[in-house]
Image 1 (cartoon, rainbow, N blue to C red):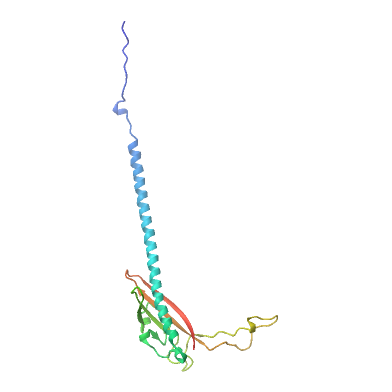
Image 2: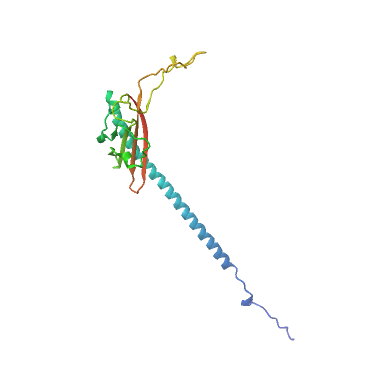
Length: 203
């Protein structure tokens, strides 16, 4: 008895194989690489922004120390000397102020002085009395920035039909003279901050 011959095909010829796993994996690796680079740059940008904001805030706080030093000097004046007729460069005080001169102009800082805070930061400040000339605010045609609060109505309230409008102004106290205190600091990384404060002190 003759058995039929069976032919078994155990493999596919190499020319019929088509691999798709490798290109897919390469595409996925490229996408992951690009995403990783984007996330890294994004996190670095956020870190730098937060660091810069903290740096600016620290400079601003240090500059405020100069403002308070100038305010302490003004508060130390007593009696008629409150007006501070004459310039005192040792205290960073200037009895006049030239309008339209910004803090970016070196002439603005003429007569300034420096102080040092607890963190060894050196802060420069200058106090300008907001007057055109030296001397008392109300003599020799001096022009100064002043303000005078008006009196409050009796009992701080008005009855029906009453009015605070009168033909003449009714002021509560003598004039208050205005002073501008300006402070600046240059940070170790080249940054800088300039803060200003205007105060009114009775003469």
